[in-house]
Length: 91
Ligand SMILES: [Zn+2]
Ligand SMILES: [Zn+2]
Image 1 (cartoon, rainbow, N blue to C red):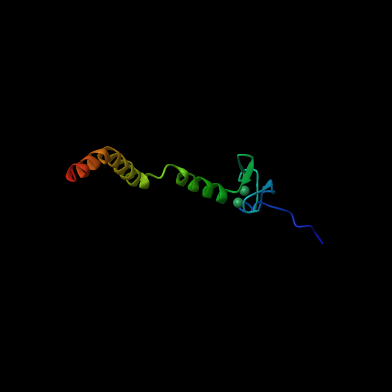
Image 2: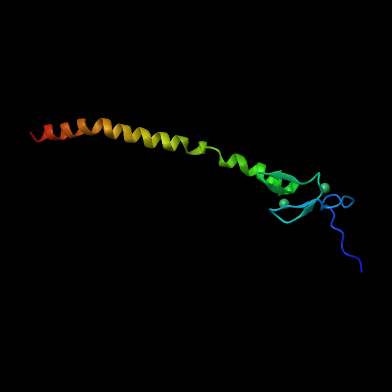
């Protein structure tokens, strides 16, 4: 009985160097990429780099935020005027 020799999941001719700490796949030295101290296989590395841009500022929400800020500013600016107008009517 022979012990199974661990080989890279992508390169069957290369010996295993590390285990991907994200999915547990065994990879060779060339396939293993340490990212912030954690070994990654090529698939997980691609997933990481794909997920990275999503953490940037949500530009889709920018018009909504601006509209909210503008309405707040308008309320603050127009409130004294509106109150004065209403008070003026009942005078
Ligand atoms: Zn992986
Ligand atoms: Zn490999």
